[in-house]
Image (tube, rainbow, N blue to C red):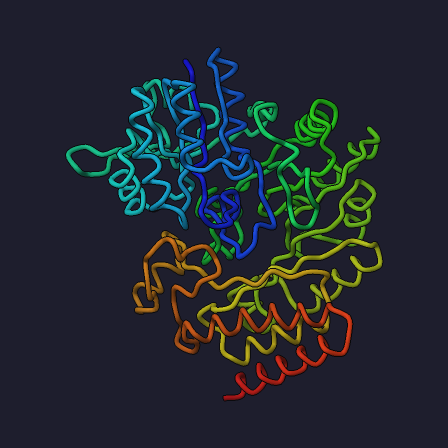
Length: 457
């Protein structure tokens, strides 16, 4: 069969791979990550003798007309199309327009698992089925209709499910078909152009599942690839595709410190020259492991911090982390020359205006190289979403606003306007503190004063 795997063109800067695969919008196109899930699917389909094409319009500069033109020229017998939460309406509209170019099976693929939203996708897209599970190994059967594991569909207007689909043995995954991607066009803001992605584990058992999208889309059970299987893909990336920058997309790359250390040992022993970045937690790190990571090519890490309020940090944001642990890791990273990117958010239910000011103080004391500040987003299906619904906190369920930067809920202590102000203030203060010159320093001081006065109200 001729099969197309396609990302709909985006009208706003969009990284579909982030937020657990639900999608993450940005005010600027700083990152464009490859559709790794499609590359895995393509590899499986090629093994079965299918002819596969991946279309990723945003990196190829394709608009809607160009994508439809590609579809018309290729004449696919099946299409798998991505649907992200913040672009759900436009993605579904795009999907509905595919029918005239494909008489065969049309599948919507999403990381959303909340059934009311899945039903909405099916209704708006007119797709034959919507796949939400891990389908890299059974995508061929889903296309042929011989399996519906990990998929939902409509029967007489009601949603019906084929049950969950989870890959227990991640070593059974093939090498992603990176030859179908425009590898030189992908980028990550902290590594630069020519970055590819890898995923060496899935799932996350930590209490952050209260608000985090990763356990929602990947489950609470942590599953990992063996170091040897990871190395095989790294060598393929470097030798066969000439790529030397890798962003590991694991929710917690160093969940098992011994496994992470073994991966580093293999990279070092094979003398593979790569530059890489990962995301993890401070309670899954130590100085010895960080030293080995640096020797293996690690340039830096994304660290989930969330809040500078120690009580919020330790009871709701990052249970298991303390300011003391964070400070120790920060000092070790600085000594080793590893960059840290603090992942921060504003708007957890326990936070107050004073909490936001404490977050500012944490930033200025620990001085991470970069930060990313988002507004708490109650992703549909998380415990936070259900709590916010019950308490009347949610202000809109327009999914276009669920990209991580818009206030879609308030809390008992913070209005939606407060959340926008807090995010804007923290980002602006950090920006001006990094810039040289008296003018920037003056702007930072004025913003700090304004934030302090706001926090004391």
